[in-house]
Image (cartoon, rainbow, N blue to C red; front, side):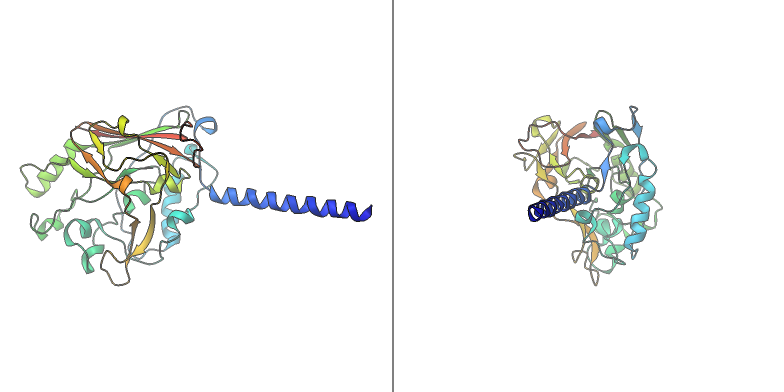
Length: 302
């Protein structure tokens, strides 16, 4: 009898340990938890300020974490619990490395000057609540712009969001880009008569993945004046991350976002205004028909 009771106790203890480990692993997998829907901490709309890009060259992981934590703390009503860098998104990032720069991408290309300008990726690193945004830099090239343009104090080589608003209780957010104003800035800065900004576009979703929204679906039928070039058959995991690679051509490589992903890269803006509606889930939906944990809209204004 004693032996039977002892075995039962051991079995129960083992079950408890396994359950505790499962809970721990689940908590680690979802260390960052947005306060949405029933867990929302405010019923009001929340306007989030967009920060300009910054220089990240040779900074440590700790410094970058502090930057993001500082921005996360500005809106504690949007988070449950504390924030930490997601290992899936930022684990491959290397300490003390240079980063692809905005001016490097726009003008210099791969090589020693590729790291010039604020870090291209910092547009998302210092704006963690910008869950998804337009990726990429305007490739001005040396055939259209002289190097003395680089001495200007403000060179709009990428389009900056003009507004980001969250509705936590409804599980919604919208980011707005002023496309016509951006075209005017480009023409003024570089002396162009016209600079059409419709055409190919890509999305970056590292912030969504970092904050726990790991699955994405973009319904083509809800897109307005944007053609989805690689339609998704259903919700898919966001693969994007920050790692150190050699595309920049700088000795030892640079930190940047990767990988190229067809269904996040192949968009064609045909006219303005335009809109994309994006559905996000914390975990993989079992049928694909479950309500999204968040609906995120990108609006491109004329």
